[in-house]
Structures are given as structure tokens and as C-alpha cells.
Image (cartoon, rainbow, N blue to C red; front, side, top):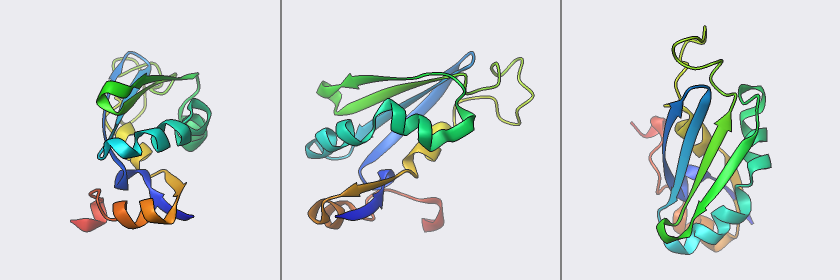
Length: 122
């Protein structure tokens, strides 16, 4: 088994509505979708964000798109118009989730490592 970051297996989009951040994770390779579905549980995503997400994390499966969608409730300090947070929008949650480390079979790591773009690549 090897450790890689989620960014090597998937790309993501995020946004917000009120106090809820929305993060979509889309597998680069449809063959990796079952691995993502198993590894990215609501509990694991909530633990990854720690105290940033105060409420429940909901997960929705989109198998026809090889994607998962997460709603992070209570993540934005009340939302963009009422929060005192520096960035009370959900835009950065996708990047933060893509930094999650996953333990995957060696062959998956070898195939996927370096696939995703990271800021240090710039």
C-alpha cells in the first residue's frame, strides 16, 4: 500500500449556499471511482476539515459521473454576507479536500501519482 493525495485521483469543484459549502469530487479515471467511494466517507471528510465544519457532512453518489458530492453544513461561519471569516465562501474547500492523503494499492499509486496539479508545481 502507498500514500498519495486525493488530487492524484480526482479533480474537484466547490461552492457555497448560505452556511453550507458544497464540494464535488470527480475521478480522473472511472476505474478509481469505487476506491473513492470507499475512502471518502462523510466521517472521514468531516475529520479532514476538523473544526472548520461544525455541522453534518452529507455525501451524494453520482456513479454515472464517477463523482461524489459533499455538503459541509456549518462550514462558513453563517455565510458570506454575515460571517466575520476572511473567506466565508466555499471556493477553497475543494483544494483543501484534494490535499487529503489516501492509502491505495501500490499499482494505483504508481499509475496515478503526479496526475493532479499542485500549487508547488507552478
